[in-house]
Structures are given as structure tokens and as C-alpha cells.
Length: 117
Image (cartoon, rainbow, N blue to C red):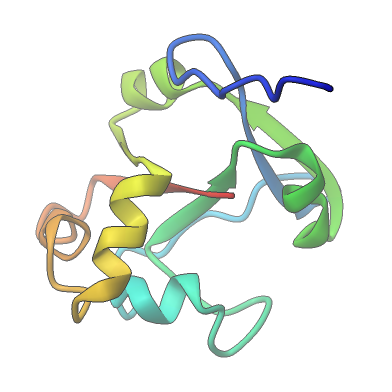
């Protein structure tokens, strides 16, 4: 029996499926509904103030348009990117998307990086 290794925010990478040459830049003025973003309404190429990442490379690969990029929570935070954990994102999905993720948008210089999977 194989024991599944638990992802650790302090040392394991976050993965993002994105373009081959670069990561798409979020638009801080785009619709800030976290539910709309997570549910992938409007499909690829939509404007969003969020950057979605995953704890799993394979999941990021599903959303990839050529490359899977990796970073770490501590690096994102140094760049003023707020990380919202998978557990917290799932709790936001139960509401109407107005919680912590919605409030962050008031500071247009800040990006939110959410973790799914």
C-alpha cells in the first residue's frame, strides 16, 4: 500500500498550466467573482484577476496551453501575490464569492493565487 504524501505549503511547488512562452498576466479590473473563475466560465483566454495554481502537476497540465510553470508560496508572497489554500477556496465556493478573495481586489496592485486540486 502506498502512502500519499501530503502537500506542504512551506516546501512543495505550486504548478500552473499556461502558455508555452509565459504565464498570462491577471487583469485586476476583470470580474472578481471567485466562483466564476474556479468554475472556468468563459473558458480559456478569459480575463480574470486571479492566477490558479495546483498542488498537482497533472492537474495543471490539463489547463496548459504549452507549459506547466512552477513556483512556491514564499516566492509568490514576496511578489505581493496572496495565496489562498485549496481548503479556503472550497469554502468560498459554498458562499457567493464575496469573502476574502473578493475583498483582496480592492487593492489593484495585489494578485490572488489560488490552489485547486
